[in-house]
Structures are given as C-alpha cells and as structure tokens.
Length: 487
Image (cartoon, rainbow, N blue to C red; front, side, top):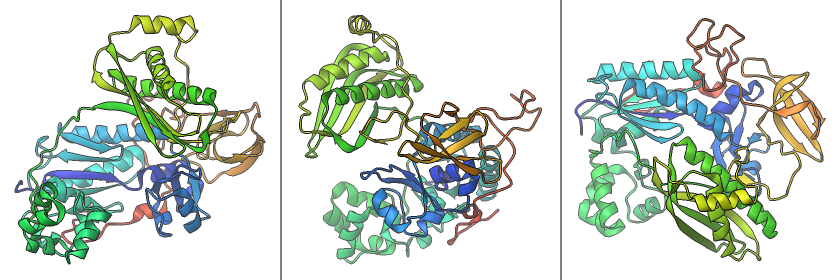
C-alpha cells in the first residue's frame, strides 16, 4: 500500500435519478425512482428524497410503490446516461492515464501515475478540482474518496456521500476502520454479514481480533484470507486502466410470460439487433453466439454456437440465434430472453454463407430498433410512450412522458434550463407528437470550442461549461465521518 492518499474513487450521487432530476425541473427536490415499472421490475436507482422513504436499489418496484406511492417512477434512459458518463470519464482520463471504470457512474483513478497528486494536499486539491469540473461540465455532483489503496478510497467515497470529499490519512486506516461494521468491507454482503454476526463478529476490529485461522474456518480459505487482510487495511491492488471484455450481451424480462412462438422469435431478433449495436459500439466482434431462455417454471436454458470467424454482422447473429431457438421448447411460456456474443476480437471475418441466407429472406439490412431498458411489456403496443422519455410537439416544443394508457399519453413540457412546465394530454397517435433526443443538461457558452454561435442546444455528448441555477435539494448535502477533508 502506498504512503500517500493518491488513489481516487469517484461515485456519482444517485446517478440515474440525479440525471433525471437535472433534465426535468419539475422533479428537482422530489422523490424519483428509476427502474423497471412492471410487476417484476426492480429499482435501479432512487434519489435521496426517495431513500428517505426506505427505497433502495435492487428493491422490487412493487415494494417501492408501497413505500413511496407519490414518487415519480421512470424507466432508465441508458443512452442518455452513457453520454454523461463519457463526459465524466473524459475528465478522469485528463487527470491520469490509469483510470479503472467500474460502471457508468464509478471509477478508480491513480493520481500519482498522472502526476496529478503526490501527497495529502495535492490529492485533496485534485479531488476538489475534479468535483468542480464535473459540476461545470455535466451539472451533476459526485462524491470523491482519497486514500492509499482502492479499498479505502471506495470506503471514503461512501463516507463522503452525497456531494462530498473524504480523505483518509495514511497511518490512520486501522483506527478509522476498527469501529465500522463488517458490512463496510467490499464483498461482505448480507449472508456473510449474518454468518459473522452469529459468530459474534460485527465490527472490523472484531474481525482482526478473530485472527486469520478463525476467519478461514468460518468463511473458507479464499474469503477468510481476504477478510483478514482487509481488516488490517491491507490492499495492494493496482488501478487497472483497461478491463478486457469477455462478452457482450442483452436480455429482457417480461411482465407477462410470452406463449406465442412468433412473438418469441420476434423478441429474439430484436435482442440480436441490440446486442450487435452494443458490440459495434465497443469496436468488437465475436465468434460465439449465445441464446438464454428462462421459461415459465424458472428453468433456464442456454444454447450456443461458434462461428467460423468473428463477426459483427446483424444478419449473421440473427441467423445463429434463430437456429439456437429452434432447439428450445417454449410452449409453456417464456419469462426472460437473452442474446450474447463471446469470443471477442477487434476484427471481423464475415460468415458469407449465413449472410447470404439472410439476404434471401430480405434480412440483409439492419433494422432500426430503439434501445430499451431491461424490463419490457410482453403485450404489443402500437405506440410505446415510456415514462421519462423525451418527446417533442410541433407547437409546444420539448417535453417528457409522464405516463400513458387507454390510448392517451400525458406530457410535461419543460427543458433542463426552464421553469417547471405545464402538462398536456394527447392521443397516442397524435401526429404532432414524436420521440426526441435528450437535451444537454448544461449549455456551452457562445464562442467555446465546437460552438456554432447558435442557441447552444447541442447533442448531449457535448462539453458544456455553464451550470443551471436550479439544483435538487439533495445535491447540496455533504458526506460526514472521520478523517474528512472539505473544500
């Protein structure tokens, strides 16, 4: 472990929910829950206002509705979140060549490798500047932890939430960790925590006192050794700049089991298209095509086929998953479908025979299928207006869907920089209403690089430099805890 707090861990605060609040003025300061909205849906992210009601991520949406019935429930907009994440990761890579993304909203940074920090004060200043740049560029807030190791930096960022910075001084780690719950340590979930509690171990100090041999006896060799090292604040893992992807996959869970075989085939084709778009977006191709089917009785079948060479051709992938589906009995109903590609490479070797077969049936062109969240309805709908998605009206301008049903769609017309907007209801087939791309959360100033002198309404992937005046109330919070450094 290093002798300076130059490992930085960034965690964006309630990322999906915060992004939705920033783009929708009427939701700022209110409970917002993002996730699957069907009876089998789960919460992806809850705003801090929703967490006050006991709502948390991975909770069934039905339970969240009982706890917070008046919250705003929105489906995820992953393309929008990725655009913001790309901006944030760009700021991190400007700090150091060693950036290890863990997800869209979380990453480790080795500040020393980028000569951005070398001691306590320089690390603290780097963290302060980063938080300010994130707010300036995206309009959002993130919490920063600084320490001499990855484990401690992650713990520090949790202590900093929301919208704070915590620095753990080298030499103080054992004293800081000691009174904390064992659940604070990475990898100690509810099951391991309960097992340790039954053995009389509830704090990190008690873990260290139990000794390595006892922990091995309680939780096994691999986990026991790791737990003891963490209890002593030992963590020598380096920040790894690139993680090699092993596979690319997508899957959908359906609110109502699908029994119609034609419908199943259509869903598999749509999943294949989405999987290929994600594959191409990563600049990859793959040889092994995988189909996953979870049936009505929760039994899960996986089928795979390895091609002669790697491909990123949608027709080839559709052909392969179609053949795989032929070997699966779906008559009892299907609750989940998934398509994946593994054996990844950064080049393609097209299967010309499979591609030609697809063209004979008119499948040669890639079908435009909008990306959708993990939970989708199984009932065909002529017009699918998803809560939270952007729309534009020919006369009223930009807005977002508050809800739909019974042939109607309710839209609130507002933009990230406007006041809370008015609500109107339309027929779902209204010709003046159309889907729209998300607006940027903040605008560039006139004259900045890439600015064309227009009204500043550029794509979400731009690098804006002003901050909206209005902020959700939860954004002003500061993290607490010992060994805290505040800007």
